[in-house]
Image (cartoon, rainbow, N blue to C red; front, side, top):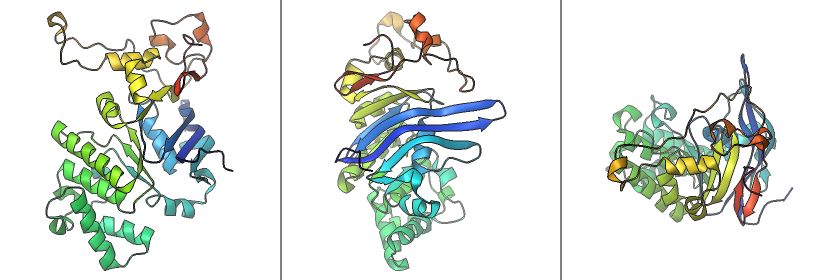
Length: 328
């Protein structure tokens, strides 16, 4: 079934991932669609709990079942339907054709094996390389991500490394098999600003070197503005806006996107505003038993009676879609 643009690497169509709890059903991802093209970085943004990480785990087919389950939609890697693949086939693709950098490397790296061993085994599994060849490749990847003395560091266990070095080790492992798609889920969380800049610069250079497309998940809009070519904004499991990065930041349409951008700290504030940060009123409601209609209505200054119905995601301008009754 070939319905994808010729240059699309990853296509997600109408994805629905629900979690079944004792309190009810939480629709963590509800009818999400996007396309990732060759050599592109797509930013996926929103507050914590909006469904960004669950979207990534769904693409990787790593959602724990139970309590989670992919209830509908399609995920294509090229022309291959990932949701139709048997688990053994999916394991071959995961790490080889599509890789993921998780939020916290200390919980993702195995504490009882050295970093070099873990990278080596990933290379051996996916590329049928011998032990010596795979080890040399793992050391080279550690050198490529900027770890000094990689021949020695390859023998270190994860707890021997700093947070920045562990993150670099995760990136080395994710890129060791030259994947077509790289999913980076909050890759700079808990790192200091200097290391954050180094990690993102590193990922950009490696993406250009290997031609890898990247899905960058973050709540850091400054980072997204610098790295991504297109942005998808999620709220309570749904996409509320998507556009080219320059269009989204120049003219955000959805009140939620406007609120996110307005809440970014400004370096050059008026003296009377110094120390005051703007925030979106209210709080994110529970995903369980959501009211029908616009999910953001309870926090929106522009709500009307029409917001009792769920607005569709409409293309207002070429390549710029928004889910809001204020438009169209």
